[in-house]
Amino acid sequence: MKILFIGGTGTISTAISKQLIEMKEDLYILNRGSRNTVLGSEGVTYLTCDINDEPTVNKLLEDKDFDVVADFIAFEPSAIERDYRLFKGKTKQYIFISSASAYKKPLSDYRITEGVTLSNPYWQYSRDKIACEEALLKLYREENFPITIIRPSHTYSDQSIPLGVHGDNGSWQVAKRMLEGKKVIIHGDGTSLWTMTSNKDFAKAFIGLLGNIHAIGESVQITSDESLTWNQIYQSIADALNVELKPYYVSSDFLDAVGPYDFKGGLIGDKANTVVFDNSKLKKLVPEFNATIRFDQGIKECINNILNHPELQKEDLEFDLWCDKVIEALENAKKNI
Image 1 (cartoon, rainbow, N blue to C red):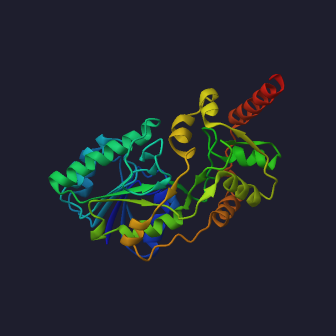
Image 2: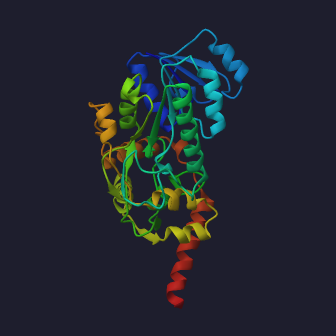
Image 3: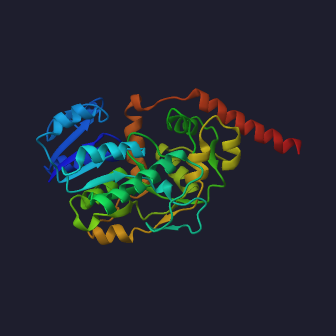
C-alpha cells in the first residue's frame, strides 16, 4: 500500500510507522521534520513542510495519490476542512485520530462501545475532537469522502511513564518522588478502573484497518482489553522502579480546585471515570488482533528505557513542591478538624 502519514512521529504514530517500515510498505511522512530521526532514513519518504502551508503541500502532492492518508495532528474542524481540500480524490481512505475522551461524561455506563454518545462538557480538547468527527461524517454522507475514525484511549510508549496526576513537564517527577521515598498523589481512592494500551499493540490494530474496506465510514476504538485500578497502575510503576509505593489519595475535584494544572479536562473529563472498553467491533474488523502486552510488562520496558536515557528524565520542581504543599495542607486540615 501507498500510505501517507501527517505527523508520523508521535507516541502512537511512531510505533505504527516503525512497523510499516519493517513490513516494507510504501510509507510517506509529511511533517516539519523536527523528529524524523526517530525513524531513520530507510524505508520512508519524507515530505518536509507545514501541513498548514497548503500551496506547498499541493505542490509536493501534485503527482501523488495514496491508498491511505492518516492525520495524527488534526485537532480542530479547520484541519478537517483543510485535509478535505488537499486529499479529495487523492486517497481511498482518510483516517482521523479522535479520542476516547470524547465519550459522554459523566458516563451512564462504564462499558464503552463506539455507540456511546459523544459529549464532554469538561474538556475543550474532547469537544474539538467531537466537532472534527461531525465534520467528517457530513463529508462522508454528502461527498462520499472515504473516512475512518479511530478513537485511542491512554496509549503509552517507552518515552514517558503514563500516569493520572503529573505536572506540565511530564511524568518523570512522579517517578523521582517514588525513588526518593516521597508520597505520590493518586486521584480519588485509586479504585476506579482504567485501561492502558502499549503503542506497539495499538499499531497492530491500526495497521489492520489500513485499506480495510469494512472500516470505511466507521468509528473504531483501539485499546487493550486489560482493566486496571489506578492503585494497580501506580503499584506496577513502583515495582518496575523497585521501590515502595507511598500513595496519597486526593479527590479529583480538590485537585482541580487547587491546582494550577488542567485537571478538570484530564481527570474529571477523562481519567477519574471508571471505563471498560468493549473492542468487539475492532476484532470483527481485524480478527487477528489481540493486545498481548500486559501493563506490568510494558511499564518495565518503559521505565528501563527512561532510566537508561537521562534526556528523558525531565525534572519538574514546581510540580514537586506543589505536591508537598497539597499533602501538607490536607494533613493540617485533618489535625484541625
